[in-house]
Image (tube, rainbow, N blue to C red):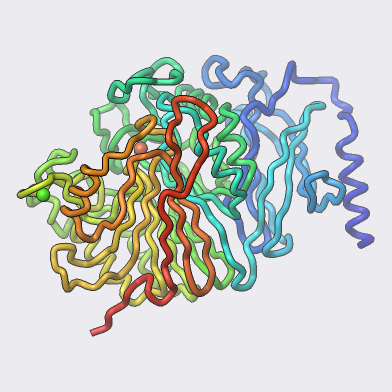
Amino acid sequence: MERRAFLAAAAATLFVPAKTARTLAGDPFTLGVASGDPSIGGFVIWTRLALDPLGVNGRGGMPVRDVAVDWQVAADERFSKILRSGTATARWKQAHSVHVELDGLEPGREYFYRFRTEGRLSPVGRTRTTPAGGQPLTFAVAACAHYEHGFYTAYRRLAEQEPDLVLHLGDYLYEYGPSGYTALAGRVRTHTPGKCATLADYRLRHAQYKSDPDLQLAHAAAPWLVSFDDHELENNWAGPVSSTGAPAFDRRRAAAFQAYYENMPLRRGSLRGAVLRVNRRVSWGTLARFHLLDTRQFRDDQACLDGVRAACDERLSARRTLLGADQWRWLEGGLAASDTGWNLIGQQILMTQRDYKVGPGREVNLDSWDGYAPERTRLLNGLRGVSNPVVLTGDAHMHHAAQLKPDFDDPDSPVVATELVASSIASDGDGYRDRAWVAEALAENPHISYLDQRRGYIVCHLTATEMSVDFRTLDYISRKGAPAKTAQRLTLPAQESAHRLRS
Ligand code: FE
Ligand code: CA
């Protein structure tokens, strides 16, 4: 207690008005705060200073100098009990972003954090450490938030549910210029000018997204585990290959990665030269382990000219990879070594086979796992020995629930895992219900049990014995204020989530 009291006193002194003569000409916390990657004793806390989110060159209207930023972590929202504090440098070279990694805190509890610089105080964020034991977990899954397509009410509703953790599985932002995504009736707001190509463009786009109050609320509500998909850089890019033949694509990719790192609560070691490493594991005590994948950076180019189309033989080539050799070994080893009750594989693109063509013949999305079928078969066969695997997915702009089988065309092929696909936060606008279309699509794909074309997110409540899944939907996003409701609830009993049939 004495030590705590001392720290609190020391921290209180720290937050006395700064002695520096320099002051920023306004509120530098216009992009909010965030936290991420929780561990048993810590997490990352993040902010990025911007006086004007849409300032020129993606610089947020900041002066050309580094800025000292004080930070505090407390046990309570009013900061009466400050446990940790320090000063970080928001560097001009890193667009005035701050990533502070905490460690040595108590497991399995809530913490609050905030920043201060040159007399200005940030909003307060809530975060938590992971537990040591088997305590239950409530987590949300989100993806695909095209800014022009609607308001971020879904992020606000997600925040109001106060999950312990948020998984964001990609398309956090879109690179297109204004109306660059298939003309959508009822566009509610406009992207910053131009398609993103340079570091300045990506920084500016991130700042535009982060200035949204609903998104800020969701970041401040819980730690996030983020992994990018394609639109954080360019539609349907694949490893070193641009889908549009963009010039100097390696430079563009490096710029998008740097801006992504600068704007996300990622650990400082995530950006390693030209590689942004987001495949990683996070354990929730003995209950669950998240295995986050990167299905974009290490993949071979899409087969059969990409797109949703009749499949050619190239997609069946066993030489082609989606994860890349290193990540494959990392995943295989991690699943084999996992000793938690649940194994939650967070990844970007649809894993289930899905025939998009109603009636005879088959059309598949060659950008998803259907375009890399042999590697999927290997992975699904490997899941037979894994404790309670559940695959969590984004990208599809529709809720899906599916049963994953090594051979989807064989009715006797065992179900080895459940896939839960989160619809989009905003991409594709208001959404709709077309019951006739859904009935046809489900009949075409008997291993898919649920489809929903409305906007939304997923909330999962996980215990040692079961996973309760709420598919949350909103009826509109072209106006603010839509309520979220549970359109579908699924319960996965622990031993049956994999329906393991050992022969
Ligand atoms: Fe998307
Ligand atoms: Ca068909």
